[in-house]
Image (cartoon, rainbow, N blue to C red; front, side, top):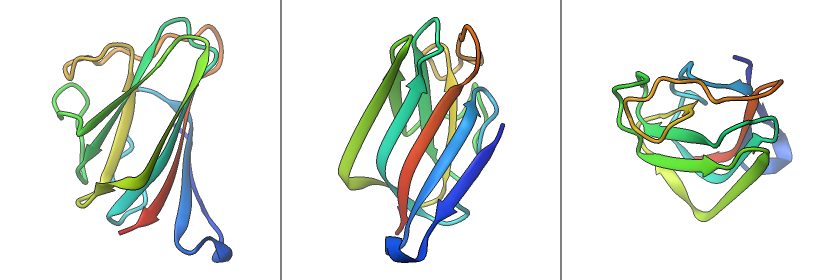
Length: 126
């Protein structure tokens, strides 16, 4: 998993968290501080089935047992964009992963023909 966090001085505290190979490996406490999510992009253009982005307001999440605080879907072969102007507050931490099925217990990686599912989050510090 290759997760990068980008910030720039003129952004007034906004950062981009990007995972170019999202899957069943949990990215725990992305950003290292409490964050507010303003925008979510799920790129499932190489997907052969829908995928689910699971986000949990916790420092440490475990796939298959941690109940997601928020759940976002993206159809196969598509990109889904979600905007939340007020933001989703992750008061404890921001942890996320993607799976093929909606159930909390699912541990199956998203189905893709080639490549990987990509996740991009626009966040700000609380």
